[in-house]
Image (tube, rainbow, N blue to C red; front, side, top):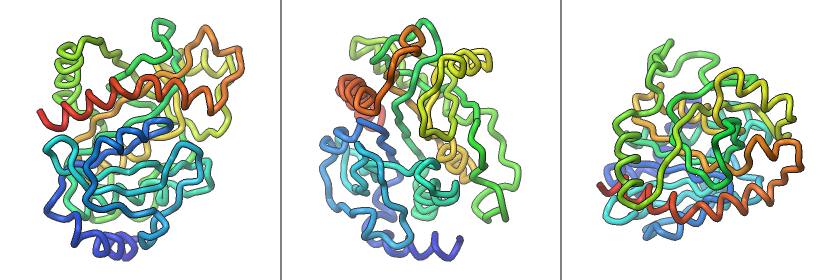
Length: 267
């Protein structure tokens, strides 16, 4: 594993290392933020040694180096999921490579179902904490030397970045939600009974990503900001949900999220 991380980092280092310390992961239906990045270099995932390949509609499968506003960034336009058949080490492999390239701050976004009855479709939720309901842990196995065997997760999501998000959103004229994100393996959307159970567990939103990446980022000492676009809500949980619906709602919320992230990264 370490050999593969180093091989990939060496491939990308001439373009990235020393240029960018901020990385962004763009989730389902949120890839248009990539258009805001003034690209210096783009790679299809299949061009990068050892990288998995995105198989989900709405995930372009590109790594972008460029500037967002005036800040150099690396952006994943599309991520990898456990339900695609990848192991957790494969899902989180890019985060390991980011660590080897000197990335110190990770912004991660996703589309999520709301379990909090006060939420509405299109809301943006700052992730304050998470519940890991995945069947495999990304740190299982021999510990890598870039972090401790038993990393602390008492502040997985950076409170100062969350506070900055609130201030910028207020300036932009909208209000952010805050809550706990629960990650499960997917790929099925939740049953009404599962929505109720997750709410009883303390979750405000549920999705199929993010948590493994955040765990690995924190293992390496990165600061993390997480944000979810709420794409469906409890009152509609008994009706059918499709990936197309999720993408459409996420796309509708994208202008707000794009401007929020752009200002956060450049503030």
